[in-house]
Amino acid sequence: MKKRKIIGLIFGAVLLTGTLLPPVRSSVNQTYEQIKLIVDILQHVKQQYVEDVDQKSLIYGAAAGMVRTLDPFSQFLEPDAHSEMMTGTSGKFGGLGIRIAIRDNWLTVITPLPDTPAYRTGILPGDKIVKIEGESTQGITLMDAVKKLRGKPKTKVNITVFREGEKDPIDYTLVREIIRIRSVKSMILKDHVGYIRLNEFIQPSVTDLLKALKKLEKEEMGSLVLDLRNNPGGLLNSAVDVCKVFMGDNKLIVYTEGRAQPRHEFRADKKAPYAHLPLALLINHGSASGSEIVAGAFKDQRRAIIIGSESFGKASVQSIVPLDDGSALRLTTAKYYTPSGMSIHRDEKTGKGGISPDIVIDIARQTEAALQRQSQEIYARDEKPKSAVKEDEKVKDEVLERAVEILKAQELFTKIKNK
Image (cartoon, rainbow, N blue to C red):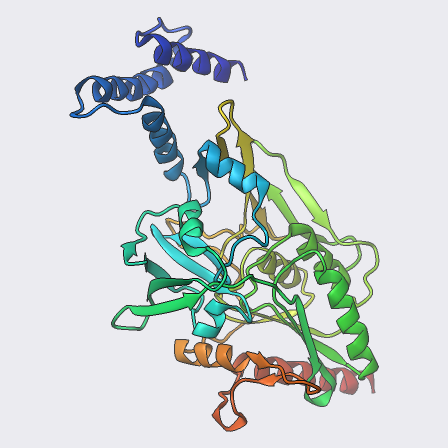
């Protein structure tokens, strides 16, 4: 702490006077010289640049550039951006219904949310949004991307997408909407296998999940497929509470740890209402954050069989550090780890991260898009919702079918074992 104060005093004195202070102690000499480099550049720009420049803009630019070298989720927020983030704009702006991140310096789709403009249009997890309104997104910040993509409901936004496996970029025109998320969808599949799709971890998710489970029990559910494909995450406590529904015995669910943050554990309760329900969990490239916490816990604790494709790999803790002038630092301060100690967050250099399923089934992008379209539901008066795609045009959901097969095989094995 004392060293930080000394460095802060040196930096402040240099900015105010433009002169150098003698080193206070040898341990800070290297940092002192590096700060001097920044101040030297600032002085040269102020004195020699072809036009007069605002000093605050230069300092903000330096701060933003410094933080940008860390990871795609750390960010320097100028006062207006910080104020906007803290105030919140729920219900005032329309959106497209996508969760986004920065990957390889490009704006990348984590997942589209069901029944939103992006989902209906066919945007897929992993798509790179390379242009917004004709302007390149290379090097864009998440905050700037959000500003460009959102707007008044019923207004249009043009984006250009690069998709792996496609030769040419794809242009889309989407109409913004107020995004409302329906957390849970449930039904009984064949042979008394229950199915619950959890779209996002929001405040009502656990309540809605328990209601769905009770409903499926009345319909004689014998096992369950929990579908977290394209679930981008959400609230940490909601993801942890979902684990507690299916896992007891105070088992470890997930823990966070950082260089300046001690290990913090999240554990199941002593008892769980559905601890013995046979369970298969579905994930894909669009499963992120909270979904990966659930998948990692169930995999490490052998609570469910995980089926699908490797998850996105976004599981880090960002802390907001307010600064004196109203700006703020959004800084990654810890990472999430599965019970076995594996970091969920994908390493930008090695590419390692995410949750690998027990049974890997990678489906073609065209099939994924088709499954996305047929999961869209249309509603008519006095009728149950039905797929927007005709029965004879539907494609096979290999991942879901494999999960049902495995659960039925487990049930048969249990019956034979108990004879």
